[in-house]
Length: 437
Image (cartoon, rainbow, N blue to C red; front, side):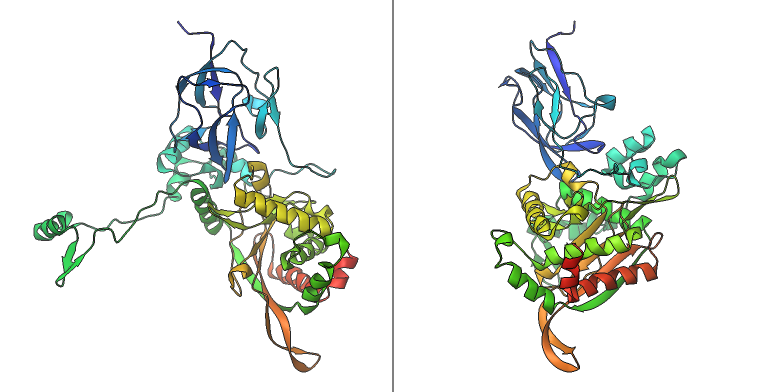
């Protein structure tokens, strides 16, 4: 007979309609007493690690998943014996926002980033791709494929079994000595601990296998989807940004920027945002299911950040309304949040345009892949002193190369070139940039 006092906590939607999460670790064990809002587990989804708070107090009866398991939204995670009433779910289908705790009556309390007043965000093209047939979901789970990044070919854009199979890379394992019938070679391997060839003994640990999970798994899925579904083109421009570097040196000495980290990326971000106002079609998404182009009249500016866990792309919501000082503050904040592992799914989802900075690694130029759900991505190369013709004379100037990759379904060559040229001209004459802030 079921125990009415045993309550079941199911994995909530941790933000923006995510479909599953990977259990990283448990903070409790069977038999432990837990309090309301006590952290019971950490899960990772959409590149963010999120601590799950307990929605009720009591004694842990059963843990229903193991670390490393992928748990679907709505699936049971833990059972707790408690005298409390089970909290009601929030939103449709029991989904909630990013959970940070529960109120005294058991209601979910959520957190969302500030958003300036304006029209609501349109759903991007990936929203339709989250739908999948039951058979496709089962196969994707077995193969470790994230359905979110697959373009569906079924009714209303639903992902089918064939769509999942087409996303699996074809690999051919090398034949071992046992398969080739080379029993002598196999014996030599087992006796020596390494393979003999030409009188040499090779150690058995020359290769290392690392399971793909977490950030690396989701980044790989996104990039495969980008390369497979987005027809991409790129264009480049080399820029004399000496005036921008001089302006930055001056602004760092002013009271308004005291205590802030003001970098060339800040000016590049501002130039991109101003250029988007001139060319709004570059800030768009492709809706495959409905065959629409969604032009977004707000900019959630994504910044690629290298972290210990892999590449993350948090985005600054409504960045188009931010001043240069706001950008300096917010860009530093989102980078630190990503590196510290505190970025939430909301921080990492909903981007409309991305900037990646390979210059910090001393690289002159890069050809990035467009993030699914966006139309373009800008790459900033290293900024260095180089010989340059300035006012008909050879001089040493601060020079960089900008690269733009774009989805050719939405952005043609002319639009991409004009947008990039505008960003370059704003960096060459940053006073014009400030006048448009």
